[in-house]
Image 1 (spheres, rainbow, N blue to C red):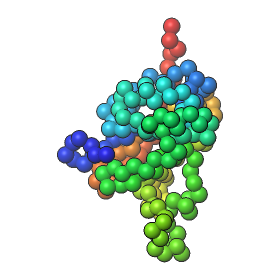
Image 2 (tube, helix red, strand yellow):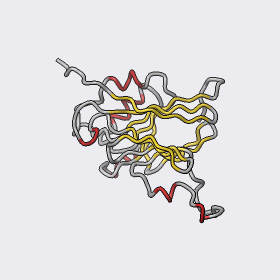
Image 3 (cartoon, rainbow, N blue to C red):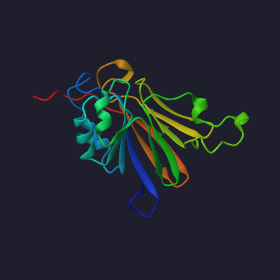
Image 4 (tube, rainbow, N blue to C red):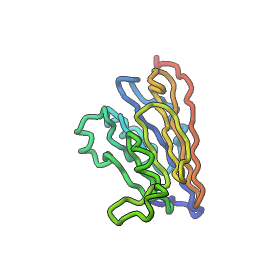
Amino acid sequence: MHAHNEACHMRIGLLADTHIPEAARRLPSQISEVFRGVDLILHAGDIYLLSVLDELERIAPVLAAKGDDDEMDVLADRRVKRKHVIHLEGHTLWLIHEIPYIRMVTPWPSRGRASTTEETPPDIVAFGHDHCTIVERRNGVLFVNPGSPTFLNYRQGPGTVALLTIERAVLEAKVVHLSAESPPP
């Protein structure tokens, strides 16, 4: 997947653990503002209702990981997999719900060369599951958990999403805090 501009620059919206309609009746409307102009939206699981992906797809193309609380039938949707391995501007991104052991993702000094049966370690891992925000580098891998826009730290109310920017060799992620909205009349 490549950005359509010549600068080799991509912006990706990240979110996870929406738990709609359990955590909230709908996605916070701010998400469409925060994600305006992104090239891709990645949902790291616990979607519950596939209509959430349809709503996000009005903003940009969407891919999603199946969450541990998602029903098996979400995998019938072309956008949803247990794990996506996505190649973006020369970088490899894993989109998963639960983070694997760090050692499964990042190379061990003692491992030496990876065998041909092992996956190449990713440059970025986007994940969810624990509803807590993380932007952290470990052994050259950028780990991003966007938290939850509806159920951050397992509390209902305004939460977080994240924006990932890929510009050639530079990978940057930032968490965006959503503010409280007035309920619809």
